[in-house]
Amino acid sequence: MNNQLSNRVNQMATSATLAMAAKARELRESGKDIIGLSLGEPDFTVPEFIKEAAKDAITQDYHSYTPVDGYGELKQAIITKFNRDNGLTYEPSQIVVSNGAKQTLSNLAMVLLNPGDEVLLPAPYWVSYSDISKVAGGVPVVIKTSIDNDFKVTPAELEAAITPKTKMLIYSSPCNPSGSVYSKEELRGLADVLAKYPQIIIVSDEIYEHINFVGGHASIASFDDMYDRTVVVNGISKAFSMTGWRIGYMGGPSWIARACNKMQGQVTSGANCIAQRATITALTNSPERIKFMIDAFKERRQIILGLIKDIPGFIANEPEGAFYVFPDISSYFGKTLNGVTINSASDFSLYLLEYANVATVTGEAFGDPNCIRISYAASTEDIIEAMKRIKNAVISS
Image 1 (spheres, rainbow, N blue to C red):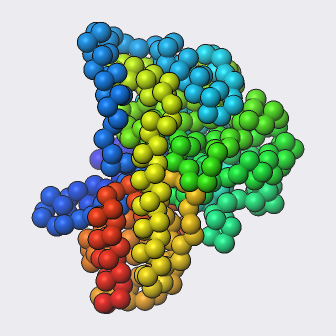
Image 2 (cartoon, helix red, strand yellow):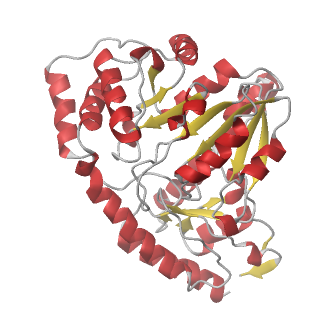
């Protein structure tokens, strides 16, 4: 009956990260000892002060439908957070709360893109940017970057990709999957290019902002000439370890916010009431209360980078944020390991799943066919054991 499905869904790729996680679960359920380093999901429990806020919301009988664009109190908390952490000033009319940052991104694509509009995606990019753009009728335009430049797009590379059809730029900093962090000076360089092309809307995905190992976070929206055309996307999944609570939000021009509110009202309506009340507490408290998680990620980063150096054929830079490493493994292309010929990053990732019992994600899904993504949002013990298994799988073949 596939012929009755829409072209839209038939042409859509399955999320590579979710597909690998599902495959790892199946193998685990069949009795295999699989170490999962494929999902971007912190292994910490939700901080107690946030749990207590959720319990209080239940006790206070929050149970009704929520406003489509979020509780007024939560929007005020988001405004406070933007001002405190990013130096950005917004009004309630510029804020929309969604069912996760992924819905925020989907809303933006649906309300801004027309068929044929081009969307610039510096690669590597988060897996869903491309298909979210395609579903809305957009045409992804991939801008290749280099590990030698820490996977950051340069002003010249950005300008070379712009055409009269360019409508949007989507990027993340800190970046999923590379962990790259754009400095304020680097963002200014990109802004100088974008200033020449006022038709381009900038979508700045900043959900990893607090998981930053190099100092202050910079937002392109902080530049006066970029503020009115930038949408900042954020959420609570990563820094607060609240992946299943599904709260994302945006700050941007009010005309875009109104359109996202309209779109969301026809698709899901408002986000979960209890999760929204807990998010108020999460955002109004000092980021110092989650610093213990950031410190742990930084320590794990050093451990995994040290271990990767001992794996033949792996080339990795030092990520400055998020909780991923994105090594180039193209030296294995054309080689045969344990009877398996490796022709791509997908082949290599599947090989590691079968012969090392370690789940990673192919870089092809992120727009870079030479790399794989390895998450270190896992225990130190799992990281050490996983790197040992990977090393054995490539040298004992």
